[in-house]
Length: 104
Image 1: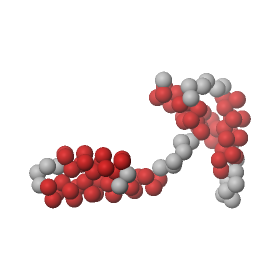
Image 2: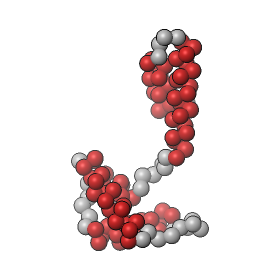
Image 3: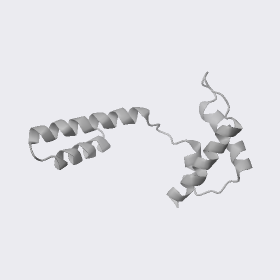
Image 4: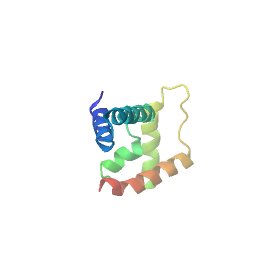
């Protein structure tokens, strides 16, 4: 078990102390749900979150250029890769803009 799985298991177990057997079963289920979620999580955050975390301010026009290059670096070798459209860039910029305060 990873450290996160151990914490989730221990927390779930401690919250259900009515029966040790029932608590262990619920804790096992919580870890299984966590593993399901981890399968869909990327190891690397998307570029708009990386730049927001860095605390940089980028104007939309500069962001679009940077974002397209960053996406090509990350995903350009995949056969399914398609460059981001203006709309994709605008949505990513909005996520960047909104998440800047998350890392303030």
